[in-house]
Image (tube, rainbow, N blue to C red; front, side):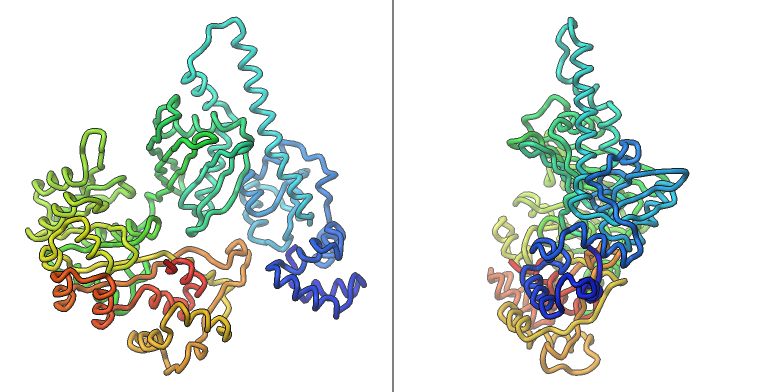
Length: 582
């Protein structure tokens, strides 16, 4: 229930539900169990869920509706698509003469109300409901969809009586065109775009199908579908992405586009066979998105100066490192967009091509016809390129071709899977590249992660308590951090301890769906290939030795860049801990 705890306590004491002294004890227990006071009171049976909802409704002057007793017509229920209903905990239950009655957990969620008003065209009238009542109403989506599919299957069986047995492919193709399937897939895609999701996961379970969106790097459950829909749902997505409908035993990859006046999205589709069926993951790539600048990506201060200086060189190799989903491709495309002028020939070899860049010659890897990174790269070198981008250096052959391209006067950009910038050198050595070649061709290495940005509408300043500081001191050298912050010029006055600094957090509001975060930004460490670093490369030094020298040369470590961004109010220390702990 959405109500400030102080207001809630006043209501409970005024209604003689409990005493002020008892409430203080209950609040401590709620905090210990990481629950809101309202949810804890219901769970601990201090007050009945419906009674609490009525009290909160009276406070907001919003009527209460018991959804467990309400029979909702299907045409009314479907006015709000299921993903939106589940995500925002809202259900349409009645309509009359241009007015739509909606039940909500948080009747003060003005952003959702305004969004529904625009989407539905109705005047929206809010009611307050209990969580359990809302869940009962949400389950009606599941029931109606299941009933529709059962009707389809029954009608199919009736129609096929006395007919020859049809092939599986034809049957699945027919199911993929059925209106309920089309509606479900269209709703999933539309809402994923609305939520700025980067991926859609469709995961078959034993008795149901779970749909999850990755939003700002975190997966969220958005929909539960009946198991009955799974074959038709998979078939529909395979039809859209031109995959083999009757192939269920092997992984498949494909892609398709969805377009409207507001967006132009390319979807990269991957299917794999798992125990309960076929799992589908769709990566959403916004083709209408404008190229970002280095500053917008999160590069700043010394890191920005190092990368710009090295990219201005006439030849050499720049590597972007980090795990899957850390934004490496976005950084590469930003670099390409910056270097793309009419006076240069830029060619790429990628797997897959994620974004189309006008004026850039982009080649897709195709292992089926033996078009690998190494073979594609050799072909590109015969095309008189100035700048070459290789999607990823995976093996010795590709690495050697990349190094030789950098030696022969080309700018080479690529990615590598390592945890930090210094680790890229031992990784190239392990692949089999000679150390003197690395030393003479590598210009710079950028290691990166993506962290969620604090919602600017609910950002609040915080001070770190002693217990938190002691925990951080076990993980990080905070004294050195203060020195780095001083050198980077982010401290307006000298601080003796980390406790002297002010950090920030998001309280959660309507604009960020009460998550406290909106959008993402990168944190980076940029290794400059100095003379001292080159000597270490030639002597096959360890990752730790290379990192120590890079720090001595002035490199800001990734976690330090994260703390600086947390100090500047861009992200939180919790996010830095989440992405930098190895």
